[in-house]
Image 1 (cartoon, rainbow, N blue to C red):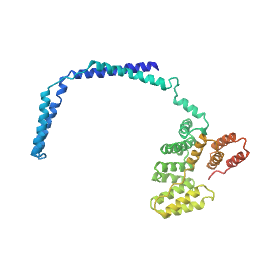
Image 2: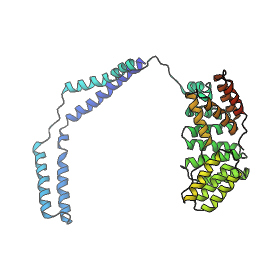
Image 3: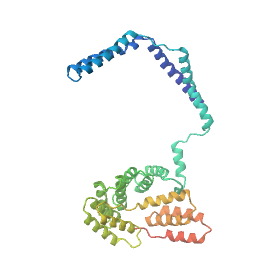
Image 4: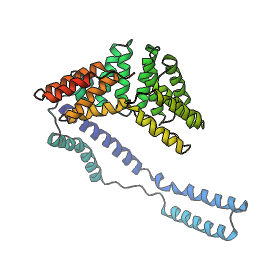
Length: 355
């Protein structure tokens, strides 16, 4: 570390010396003081050209010509005067250039952490992978899942979970890329096509683009009852001006949803808003992102039994068994002495997956 600072000081002094040397050479060149003479002569010629082309009135030509001539004569009378440079000023600049890294080193030793070891990315990644998922923020979770996906390039599941983490960290473009990879590995899975369509909609700031429509069509081919694909395709029709047709599809979707389906309320709100005017209805809430937000909140503020029950039930409804079991284990360990909470957690874990 100290060798680095010594080298930086020497390099700074060397650079400062080169700059000062060039400045001294320029100061000894008297031609530099006469550089304005050609400029004023050119101004006189330009004034005459403008007047000849009729772009300058005679009175304006005379005043401009007189001013340029006055400046030309003043510069000519001044003659070539060499610059002067005080050697003491050069020595001061050289000393300051050499002292700057030393001052920086002193400040680093005073307020920095010179004894703190390096933290290579590979070591941090290994620590994150050894950390329970519920204690990682979405950005670190995405880094872990990227490494897992790289180790299992033929498995679509790491890419699916990576997309969830990327979405939770606010990067829908990265989520779209991950889901494209997942779809290429398992093109027969309707849930991956649905997730890719939703990511494409979020990436386009809520617009159901032609690409998103094509993706949802693929999902619908694999699962004709897909609520997600049906919702967004109908929304795309409403955005395109086919309001009645889109509303009819939404009403048919509502009739097919179970009475306790959490998406039913959002669909009712979308239908009501579309019926009031031609503006596009809002998208259905991203259930996955909501669950990720709940998990992140519990990681920082775990003393919330109701939150743990909701998290376990949400993972169970989403069919994420591994995450459900991990959340259930964490909650049971925290509330081992509370039979009521343990009973509610067990009931939440038995919730049927959403179809």
